[in-house]
Image 1 (cartoon, rainbow, N blue to C red):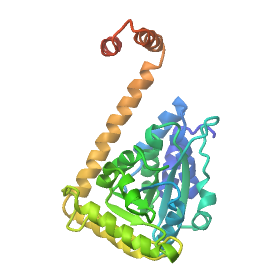
Image 2 (cartoon, rainbow, N blue to C red):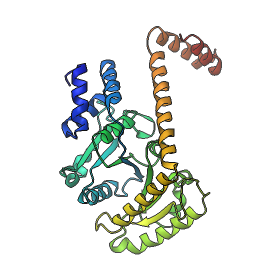
Image 3 (cartoon, rainbow, N blue to C red):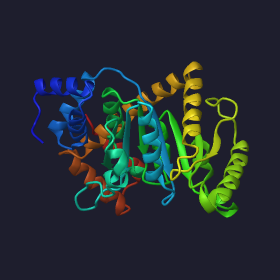
Image 4 (cartoon, rainbow, N blue to C red):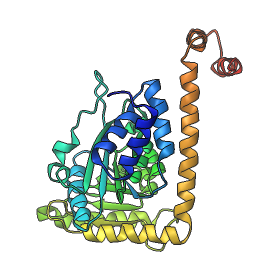
Length: 327
């Protein structure tokens, strides 16, 4: 990618705000770059963008539940209503190249051809839980480009849910029709952060099983502690069929109703403010760690690490010594 100059950054920001897809793709490549000069340009680009808001929807689910099929069907329904939809799918990274390896555009072929949709697989680059460090910035770029809905898909069930929930307005957990044993296997922590549980594949021979599964999850949700950010009846479980399209409109109505209620009661704005502060603190932590890995700090870090590994230094005391030496 050619190095953008300062005037180029201003031009890129203007074209991005105007909704140019090529400008958005180039901007995402810039913010995902690890080069120090690109990092400075990415910071300048983000600072030049106007504040815009899309509805951010985090989506996760167990492998094989049909996340890609659901996102494609759901996204096509939204674009059919005239909404612009961005899909940011955080893929596992290739251990060799660091690039994403799932190829979401091939998994969502129809949605990728929709002029109102934008799909961007983003390599996790070994980040905790598979959520790329720059995902927040990519969400910001998609909002500035005028997208109405941003879907953030995680790799699978794990710690990534907490990270995605921190950068989303709504968090949706997609599950498959299952029996009681499978219900017991769903971690309580994941249930507690879900705003909506959608049981996919509610069609054909699995329709009756899906209906029972929805009832089981609805019962489990009622046992959870009431959250201040929820109106009466939330969180809730609903059946959907990505294959037949059943339940998608109802799910969207429930998402909108929840988001509207949170806007009216200030929970939405408060959560966005907390997200911004969390983003700031994560950038500070990442910046401090980067400084520790630069010379001469890197040598001191390696030496103290070796002392700790050999049992000659206490980890807490060594960390305090390392931090005390920073200027």
